[in-house]
Picture 1: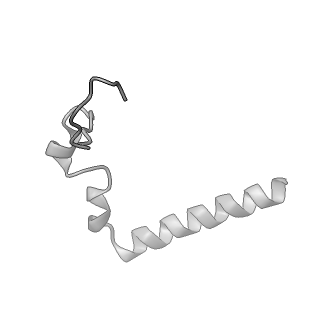
Picture 2: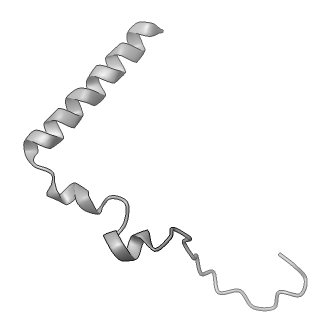
Length: 56
């Protein structure tokens, strides 16, 4: 903070190339996933975790 700063709003400004305006944010499409899609992702994560553990 500079000594010349007498007023600060605390506003956060995201610089994302207007992605939020066009898509509602990074995770907006997750609500469209089916239960099968979620299960497939869980299985991929489990597989990756198990591989990482085995490599240790």
